Length: 110
Image (cartoon, rainbow, N blue to C red; front, side):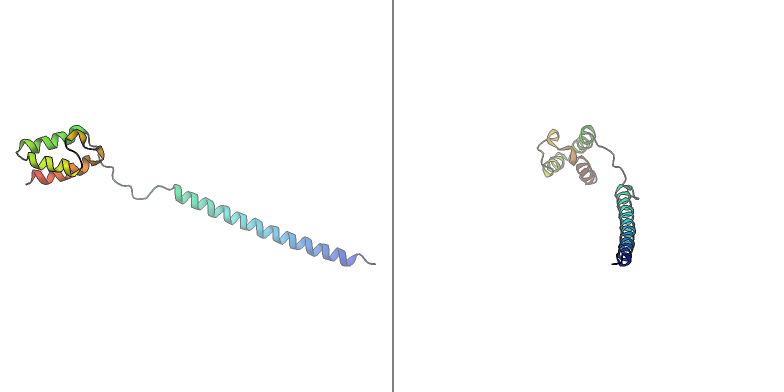
């Protein structure tokens, strides 16, 4: 009985295992590179920064609406407040400040 065929088979198996390891290593490196680039893309800030809108205070809104009311358009001010779900200015949610100021500009010109 000769051992040569067994040694040849073992050498072939070792070569196949080595090739498989190389392919697996290349696949893992590729996957890591893709994961890093995906993370970088997710972390990258938007190239177009949205302009920051100024924060409006209760006093800002009160001043604008008071000017309109003093100019004789109390009903318009009241209608604006009701449009945003408030019966009086103190009931107005701060999220509506910018919108009500914008709408109030229309009352100034009316």
